[in-house]
Figure (spheres, rainbow, N blue to C red):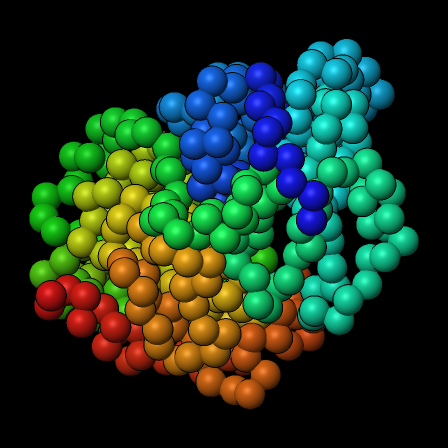
Length: 377
């Protein structure tokens, strides 16, 4: 590996053209880059509507938003805006488009290279040109390398000793607070737990009846329950279905945010919670970043790759690949049984609308036991 520790870029562009969770996990990278280059100007390029995770980030001076499917005119405008404006582009996603943005915008590039979802190698031809246009690359490892470490290793080439990257505590930076809407704030009148049942894809779902049992138990402990969701129709319907299973007394102790909170408002809600419980989704990462006691329900996804980062952790890997229960700092990860866990497939049928047997077998009693331990501390 070549050493470019003498490089001092004046303008740096971070590129993360994916979902809000993918944006959030770039924040340790941004913080570490700030330590390297205290005088540099940092800009961030991402999809429109996905950059709320960076609201108030002290290190980013300009945000550049693009559509996830730009037309020719938008491409042209964006390329004119980006063309050779930067000394360095840091490409945090392995997509062709992200690399093209990096190629257009900067004199030098470092970037992530893709790999096979089940860790079987591959991507050679597709990665060849990306290696050619980069001064340094990091290859995705979906089983052994945490996504936070993956992003941070993009900076290895700029350190005299790359191992120094992981010698200090590493934290994820959540968005700054935003006042809750009066309708929701007015209903919060006692200690509360936030639940987020809705993942982006069906194979990360936990069964409806299990949420019902968990909510019933939480309210019996004298806690309010706040149901979080995005504004997506499927998430709103999922929460509606869960509420329909509750008896009247339990239902009165549940607040449905109905997708009406912004990401910064969700952060405010999470900071005040006694506990957060959710599936493998971006809000679970946000809860951990807000230092809220967090229980994450994991199925097919390896926690070693995308488990919520425990703030202040020193090192490059907080988690084991497989453990029914593991707690690091404020984060508890629960996994279902089975030798196939985690498979890194899209559920048992390897498609977005599949079920996942490991989550079907992750019983409410396991979640309740973990919640008891946290709430009784």
